[in-house]
Image 1 (cartoon, rainbow, N blue to C red):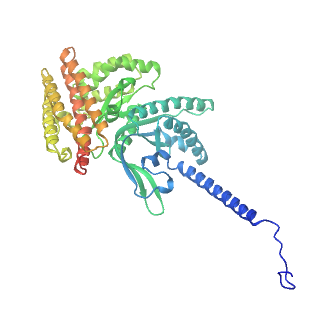
Image 2: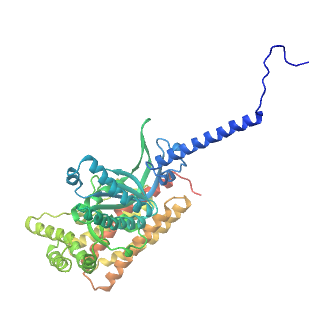
Image 3: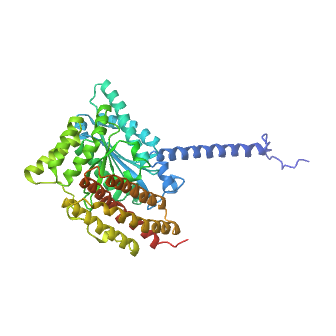
Length: 461
């Protein structure tokens, strides 16, 4: 007897159920792979907006893990660069031509920055802001390579019968906060800190001095071996909102060979002339500057200083930075909160002010007595600071100790030259004062305060 009721429809399954399940599983696998591919494509697209290196700094694995307010502190060298006279150049082109031009230029610079371990934080029209985490050497080498690439790019523009372009690059090294800012519906990555503001100021200074690459003394101190590059002291500038000016330096590795050679040959004369100008002894500065012009006729900063000297003679107007005349003042911004550091730094500041007065009065015959004092100051303070940093796991201890080392190396070289008694003592006193003033501006008032705040907020090992 049939197991089915009469008149019922018998359904015959010709495909085994196992094959139905396998088919469904295959479709699920395909759909999953498609979704994974889409996610990877989406993340790759976002990676062009927020670099993976920046995600690594923020210690997140994926763009989807980034949250508003994520932040981390790092010591970095910041780069600002932009195209000279871009506005009139832009006005001569249509909007479409503008976009094509900017993209053609940026596409030349982006790979160079990446090859030198730089992270492009943002494009601001024709300007580039980039970050170098691994040290100033990468940043300076990268900037030099950018200027080399610009020569190649301009050769292409010349073949296409376009005018060549020029860029300016500013580099500064310091502590910054990297993180995300914005609102619920729109956020962006950004870098915040005094070091960023100064970098923008340096990039602007490249226009004044007609020097395509200018670095701060902070970046100079961070270089492993400054002698690898062609560098010379250029000026001291005061940043808006800051009480103490900073020294700036020209890197001229990208000058044409003849100009670069001439600048190297005239470098000792140029730096003496600049010192005499800052000491308001233009009678000594002017003949030295004229000698520089004889050696390097196309050295634009020389012409700037010669014009400043003539203006001072004619009007009495001098681009003074203040403390070179009156000395340093102990202010709240100098106080770290750690008594032994504050006492030592204040005592050093008082000795620097004595040196400033000696220079002003042209009484530098015995200024060299400051060197034993500085050596004792360093021997008493630096090992103590470094031990505190180690015992409290200060994350920037190595960098801080490197600044100590470079500071003492610079002063040891100046002391050696001073003991030889073969150079103008007033000039050597000025160079010594310069090192000490920059030390207060960047280390005693910033680096020391930063590490003491860490000590106050942490527990020792």
